[in-house]
Image (cartoon, rainbow, N blue to C red; front, side, top):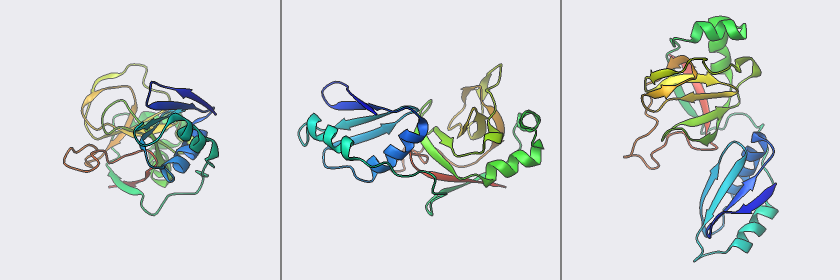
Length: 203
C-alpha cells in the first residue's frame, strides 16, 4: 500500500489488486473518523478526501496505517440489492458459445453469483460489479455499439454492469432490467454504490 498526496485536501492510496482495494474500502468505510468527506475506490486505488478544518493530512495517514482490511469473501450480505433481469440480450447466445456454458448456463452463473459493486465510473449510476465466476469472464465486443439501451445488463472481462442510460458501449449484453440506477430525487441518487451487494434474478 502506498499513500500519495493529492492537492491540499486528499490522499490517494495505491494497491496491488482489486481484491485489496475492496478489503480496504470496507474497513475504511466502516470506520471513517470526523473530517473524512469522501472515500472513492477504483480498480487499484482509493481516493480519500478530507476537510482540513476538521482534520489534517497526518491524522488521515495515521488512520490509513491502522486500518485492518475486511475479508471480502463473506458471501452476499442481507442488505444486498435484488435486481430482476430479462435475459434476452443480443449477445446472450454468443456469450454462451464463448464460455461454453450455453444460454441456460450463462443465466444460471449470473444469477447464482454474489456480486459486489467494486467501484463506480463511466456514467452516473454505473457500477463495476465483481464476484462472478471465472466462467463468465468474456472480452469486450470487437466492435462497440454506438448506442446501448438504458438498463442493459452486460459482461466485460471479470465485471458485470448495468447501463444507467443510453450510451455507446462495448460490453457483451446478456439482458435488461427496469430498475432505476440513477435518480436525482433519491438520496443518494446512485442505487449501486461501492461496497453494495447485488443479486440478479431472472424474470
